[in-house]
Image (cartoon, rainbow, N blue to C red; front, side, top):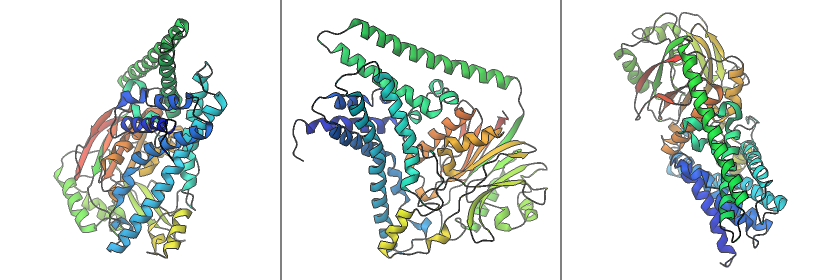
Length: 507
């Protein structure tokens, strides 16, 4: 394509993509989210831009945004966690990662492309009208919702969990550090917040457009300013109200329990159990034996297990003798081979005084290419004629999403990627969870900060949406505890083997 004056306009949607990247974790330049869509709007209202070019421009914006936001997938190299042991195997996996990443980025970009096409086609935008204030934000969240479905569709496989679960890139996550504004998530969820953000973008764009006209309408400018002020005051006032309400609720004295969150720092290996048992056991047991604090609930990261690895609760209780106390609830994750040969990633709830586990939860939202092989990946592997017998390393998805009643409260557990889905966490809360827990391992991503920052942002919104304390125990990442208002109560500041202690209230 020759560079012409018309084609140079494509810099505007690309600029929108860049602004979205900078507003999204880990960069967290929150102020940019309020103007990030404006360059795209200027592109769309240009009379020289056809619906076709609107589609291309929107897709470009999406490719820039999602390409950078998902760049953490390359941190999975080297692929020792998949069992790659030679340079050739690592190279083939890297090529496959690049191919799948490119397909995924373009596919997700298409949602922003279709959004732009519709805005141009339906609204006939050569100017912004009153209806645009409703049409554009509504279209935006519709395509965010469809994109959450689309991620699962492009990575379709036997173990795909259908639903709007993959919410990466939602505008709401860009406000995760703004406690006042994210309180609205308990009513509108992330899509309600995203609607308001896009509404503010449209309003600012309209205001600037009107002011720049030779004969501007003072009435239109005044109405827009009043609308922006009203949105801001109402939004912030709700946040202030909810924060004060929560403080009153906690002062009323709901049941309080003490939790212990374990953090480990071990690379995944190629064995069936992802950690080297001897090394992990020594490091972790040293932690348990050197601390004098006790806890009502102990939570250990994904992939680490004492009961499952020893195969005996009596041994586990002996190993934990300096830390364990009667009535204590112990949560650990392990890979389980069922009678039918299927493999599950299972979160066990133990009272070590009981013969059997209190209950368990099987991981439901499996990560494509990390927890299972999508059909698209299998196709490329077949083309490669490349087989590391990967199927035996992957999981089958769980079916039940229930909180577990324990003597220390009703606990709603999830495993790693479950925090991405508002639906999964909301469902378990509605069923009676008083406290939310996630166990995770970021070892395949080698602790890359981009992913860790995005996980923390999503976890904050999950805490606010459900008005519950939210705890995460992590391997090769950060362990943390969040309050029901999305505030960080405690968080590790660096990688390493450690235990966090804190009090929570059962809500």
